[in-house]
Amino acid sequence: MSFIYDFSSATQAIDQWLKANLSPTGAFVAELALVGLTILLAYAVIGLYLVYAERKVCAFMQNRVGPNRVGKWGLLQTMADLIKLLMKELIPIRKSDKLLFNVAPYLVIIASFLGIAAIPFAKGLHAIDFNIGVFYIMAVSSIGVIGILLAGWSSNSKYSLIGAMRSGAQVVSYELSVGLALLSVVIFSGSMQLSTIVESQANGWWILKGHLPAMISFVIFLIASTAEINRGPFDLAEAESELTAGFHTEYSGIRFAFFFLAEYMNMFIVAAMAATVFLGGWMPFHLGNLEAFNRVMDFIPPVVWFFGKTIFIIYLIMWFKWTFPRLRIDQLLTLEWKYLLPLNLLNTVVIAFLVLMGWYFK
Amino acid sequence: MNGIVQYFTDIFKAVRSLWKGMRVTGSYFVRPGEIVTQQYPENRKELQMFDRFKGEVIMIHDEENFHRCNACGICQMNCPNGSIEIISEMVPNEEGKPERTIDKHIYHLSMCTFCGLCVKSCPSNALAFGQGFEHAVFDRHKLTKVLNQPGSRIKKKPKAPKPAAGTEKPNSANS
Image 1: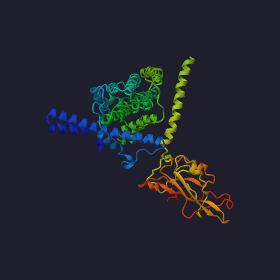
Image 2 (image 1 turned 180 degrees about the vertical axis):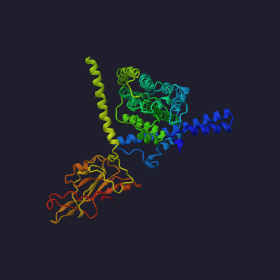
Image 3 (image 1 turned 60 degrees about the vertical axis):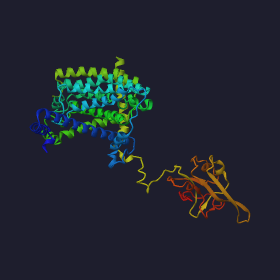
Image 4 (image 1 turned 90 degrees about the horizontal axis):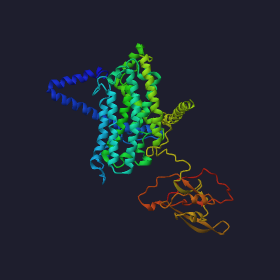
């Protein structure tokens, strides 16, 4: 059972077994296929259950029950929804830009696939460990907006176009805040590599070690990333009450499901990033030199720590969505350019000063 | 300087008001006992509809099978879509004088829009809204109901100026 605490021995065993039984190229291809398949499966399952979780959380916050008919507590509801969407007709739009219209959902979903590949799930359970991991995830997550813009443009519909343009303006502005908020932890840990950032939190999470400035950048990261993934209260790109469904108004069947799934997986990636960078990723909760306490915390497997923190952040994001009313586009931009960005810049300078003087918990 | 103070107080006020909203939804989230949704087909036996629910028009009968309808026909006249038909007959009373008595108070549930004008306009408060709502039938003739129960008689006003409330039998007027 020790592999639950450290996956690297298990993955190495698989690697050696493949290399012993296949040619080097064959082993490489087999490993790629294995990792891809695992991520694909995890993607589908996590995405579907996030939709279910959202519907349940929303229901409880509105004094309702939520889905409870398909399976125990409605656990199979989203599976049934997926099967329904798979069987539905893909309606072709006359006078739409056929190529872009068909490509857009794949662009959006590929962007979130690329993002999920670089997330450290547990010790040794990390598909690609770039030395610029933070930068990579930020870069990849903004590819998605190209898909959204293409979807809005190619649908040849006013709702889609307005939704896509709003989404473009929103992502371009909030990207700055997300980047600067992540930069604060990059300054603290002195590395952009996600595994190094996680290792640097072995004696305490950055949100605690970096005290007030780290907390401020955590809050800014939460707000800005909620806006970046087009979720309420910043869901202007698909404001149901104004734009029917925004950029995916004209999509049907499985293409719509792709947009939907990508939206939820982006939420997962953002939550996983927040958990990794600010809350220590798979690192257990350690407090300085309290040996007994740290030992007890080590007993909980890293996967549980990672998913626990991620689920907590996801719950926070859902809580925002089902509490706050949607912002107007000018309010949205005011919030970013007049409040978040100046605060964030100031915060970054303060953090750089703190690190220079060593005024944080090491 | 004043502007900067204003800027930061704005931020703190915003955070406080946002937290106020999140406390409301968060408190509902942790109290699932307050869920108001009825699990209908499962709780069919113990389901209690609320008092003001307009399920169907019924005629109030007390336990001695007395109703208060004197066949005046005001409900029939007031019904906008003709879902009430009054069939009355002349029956001699104890003094030997002929008196208008209800024979059949016919109610077409299929045409009723539950506007409530009949209940509101009834001068002797003979009609009321029942709480039954499972009206689905395979034959639409079953939706035509006779509201006065067989063998029921009118409760004379002088003998009982105010019939006690709470003796209604909802859902008992099915033909």
